[in-house]
Amino acid sequence: MRKFFTMVPVILLLAACSSEQAAQEDKHVEDKKVEQESKTDDQIQKETKEKDQVSEDKQENENLAVMPEYRMNEGTFALEPIGEANPKVALLTIDDAPDKHALEMAKTLKKLDAPAIFFVNGHFINTPEKEEIIKEIHDLGFVIGNHTYSHSDLTTLPEEKQKEEILSVNEIVEQVTGEKPKFFRAPFGSNTDFSKQLVREEQMLLMNWTYGYDWESEYMNGDAIADIMVNTPLLQDGANLLMHDREWTNEGLERIVEGLRDQGYEILDPDLIDTEI
Image 1 (cartoon, rainbow, N blue to C red):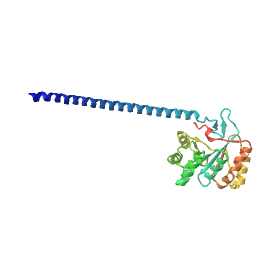
Image 2: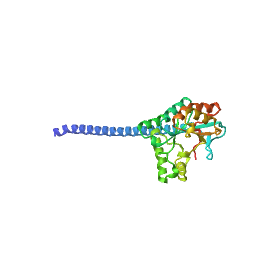
Image 3: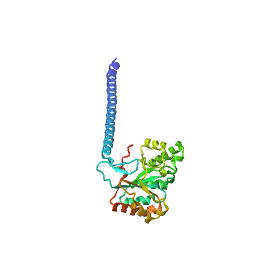
Image 4: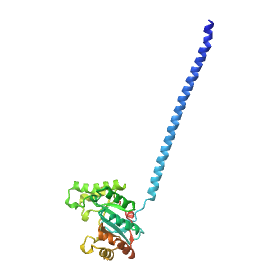
């Protein structure tokens, strides 16, 4: 009997310990739950702040986006001022890049602080080295345009082939530079109803030119092409100058830019052109 009474306090003590341990375990579980919920709330708040920051940055970038100051005349392909923009401008464009001289031409234009569009052919961007050239031209600040993959006359191709010629270049340029072309120029200036519609769907501005000479034999030297590009009677406000990745055009390029400026022309930044269709 005494043994029984001796064991009672022990049993009660063990029961108390068990109850206290259970209470501590419950508290620990509850604390872990609260901690987890708190951690989740913190994470949610962090993600919300990050999303808000991204939205603010996007809005700020949109606010800082350059507003169009020029619109292309779809009949003449000249650039016309919107509002009070300077009408005496000339746009420089270089086709068939990157054949042999595009990067050197880009560096010349960069030195002269003269913007331009480089219209590329996909078949020239066929090695990592050529991809790097396109990326370098883009990183120098120049706009990369789409001049089709193989420089074929689109009017001679079925619609599926026309589509491949145009979209493949968009894909290449976007992969290399991170930006899809905003400007399209068909080889020989030859478009079809299908290519025009596809270019609109791709949100590109279809562009031809007002004049160019460097494919004519009499202008295939630096002096001759520099002279005619500046002194032609076709030079006018908003002129859209067509040039190519050629040795003689490369040789005359600096003189062309300087000659245009001597005549009071501002070299037009392509980013100021309204590409909305």
